[in-house]
Length: 382
View 1: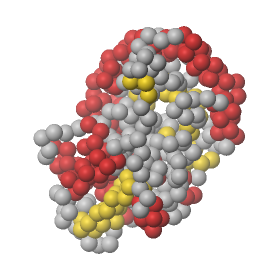
View 2 (view 1 turned 90 degrees about the vertical axis):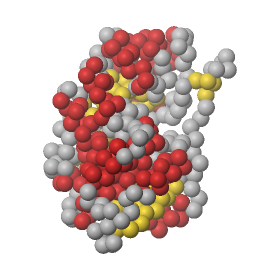
View 3 (view 1 turned 120 degrees about the horizontal axis):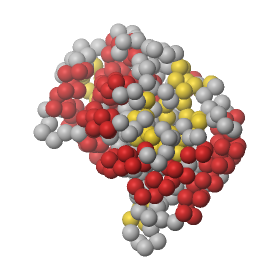
View 4 (view 1 turned 90 degrees about the horizontal axis):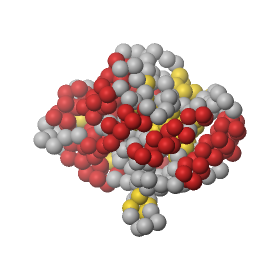
C-alpha cells in the first residue's frame, strides 16, 4: 500500500482537516492545526507530505521519526502540530487496513468509556454559576472555566475577589461533588498566581490549569507550596522532551498534552506513559474538532492515568459550526452521565462527512485570538 495523495480543508470555526489517500482506496483523516495559525500549519503539512507521497502508510513510527529528526530545526507548535495531524491520519489508515480501532493496535483498552468535561463562560467569564448548573442538568459531572480577565504582574485583590465570587457561584449551584477546573490560561504571572491558588483552596477544585506560562514552569515549585489543589499544565508543550523536566521536577499533578499539537497519537502515547512513571495524571487538551477528539479517545482508552477528557461541544469559540457538524454519525460522541464511550469503528472510529467538509471549506476561516491590553496600554496575556 502506498500514499497517493492528500487534501487539506480549512473549515469553520477554526479548524484544519487533512485527508490522506492510498492506492488501495483506504483514506485517513487528521486534524493538524494551531488555533489562529491554521494557514501556517497548512504550509508545514504540505512540506512534510512531499516526503510521504509514495511511501507505505503503515510504517508510522519511521515516518514520525523522519518528520521529526530529518529536519535540522524541530519541535515547537507549528512543526509538531503538522506532524500530529499527519500521524493521526496514518493511524486512521492503519486501523481501517486491519479493520480495528486504533486503541487495539496500541495494546488494547483498559477502559470502556472516558469521563469528559464541558467549558462554561468565555474569554471574559461571567454568569458561570447558571451555566455550570445547565451542564450538570445536561449530564456532565465536571466543567472548566477561565479564571480571570487580564492581570498585571502585581494586580488588585479586587480582581482576585471577582474570581472567588464566580467560583463560589459555581460551587453553590452544582454542589460539593461536582468537578470544577479553573484555567489561569497563562494570563497570571507568578506573584498573583500564588495569591489566587491559595485563595481558591476552599472550593476544592478538580485542578487549576496553567497557573503560569510553560516558559515559567520553574515557578510551579513556589505555587505548589501555596496550595494542595492539583496543578495541571501542558497544552503549550509539544514533545516528550518538553515534558521531561516538568515531570522530573515533581510539581505538576496533571499533564494536558494536545493530540493535535504534541506530535499526534504516536508521541502522546509516549508522553502519557512517561507521566504514569511519575504518578502524574493525564487530561488531554482538546478544544478542537471531531478528528482531534477521536484521536484523544483512542489513546485515552489505552492509558491507565488518563482521567478526564476536554471536548469542545458548545465551547464559546465554536461559532458557525460545532463539534458534531462534520460527522456522518454524531452519536459516536453521545455523552451520558458525564462519560463518552470509546469509538469502536475501525481507525479513529468516526466517519467524516466529506461532502459537508468541502462545502464549509469553500468558506474557510481566518480565526484569530483577541489582543488584549492593560489600562496602561501594554499588551496583556490572553
